[in-house]
Length: 482
Ligand code: MN
Image (tube, rainbow, N blue to C red; front, side, top):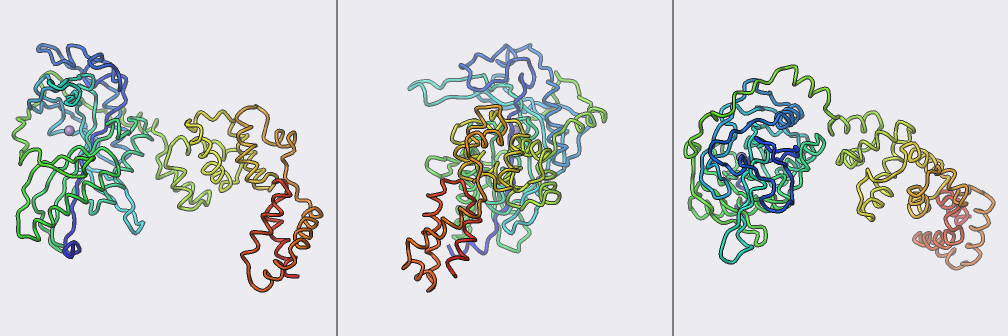
């Protein structure tokens, strides 16, 4: 579509983070996923008249953690509010949320734009609220079923300013939010289970224009990839409408992942439709500075700080530092290993190569690898000193380390896996293979450098991984040119 380049897309995201507290937001019902329907429900979750909600301190602490991590202002005087609407999975007839005093304001999420430059996406607010139950429409042919296990589960809603400009930026934003809630250990961030949900406010406008046109809210985006797809789809739809001199109505649309389409849910609604008023059953919550500083002290080092340490102090590449900090457990283990060695790059390679494959192949988490960090450090030293070949490490030595308390050095000695840097045997092997293929040697000398692989392959088969391939390679090249 020729007109695509003349429009820009304006995106703001509303992200709901389901917290992994033990109990629900306003009562002691367990907060569990995947239980039998309606088994985590007391009269409070079921919305019986006359029951009283009470606040869960862990929800407040989680909100403060997230707020601090995103450089927000933490609100001292917090009120709760009722947001009134009818839905069968909302038995009270209202949601307890926050209206005029969200617990966090301001702050930003840092993403990298398409040119790998840091871009700060401003936040409007983060507020605390509760989830609704679940209506199930596709299990029974005649009835809709209601499961109230999710009713009252604590949520943080993160509202961004309309500062995202492309589907890719929205993806990066959501990716950062997910990474952060996992680092802070306040949510599992799993979009497929609904622990992280995203609604996107999307509008388009002619490039250069400062005016915001009608926006459309797209709901039910349930994966990172679908965030991009839904935004792409909706901005195309709006551009097409304007190109054909049609209007775009301010409305809420539903994203359907199986058909990759959006359909209208409801037309324009306004905040006053919900008749917000202060929740009379929960007294105001005052957040003291002392609580904030206590939480600050217990916060883990965030991915951004770790990235800086890895690139500046350990001199790792941008690529390595990003990979290592993607997952907190990986990064934590890396930090433990490098207390015993300064071969940072070798440790990074070992973790992202051999160890990551091992974890994936065995469907376990990195924490389930039962090897002492100092043993992994020792292994990195051995690799660095060319004492063991990469093939031996990934196929034999590392798997063996998971079965024994012996150090990698002891294992390799005992099994005869130590790689020899034996100059004489390397010379012999190289000469043998050169003698075996005289015509190929001529071809190589005449410029067919691809033949190096053939010679290397032949020699490596003979060495059974015990001789250092780097040395062989150098010796071979020298002898071939003699
Ligand atoms: Mn909400």
